[in-house]
View 1: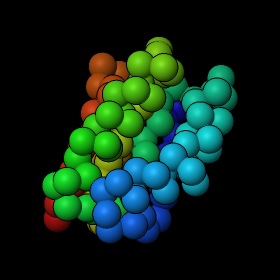
View 2: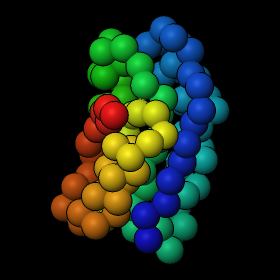
View 3: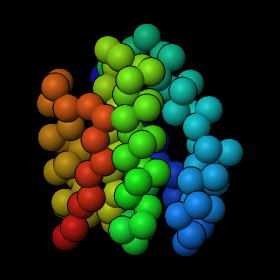
View 4: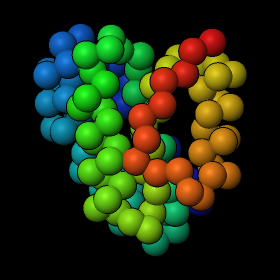
Length: 105
């Protein structure tokens, strides 16, 4: 079963946003991944400028490596059809893990 973790707003600065995620949400992500019923985790982050890409991709890859065979992906976007469709795709894509996907309407 794919579970979801939505962070809500993060700081505008990439460095501050990464630090806030680590301080406020990393343990929750690890707890979800420790649940034997979880086969995948989709972390939903708010849209951000391109300079946030590196820390988000590193987070997706490192969590995925450390949680295998569970899958971890990060999805960025506003609520809407694009985000919903991406989450549906990930739920049915057993080979996709460690990715950072940006959704646009």
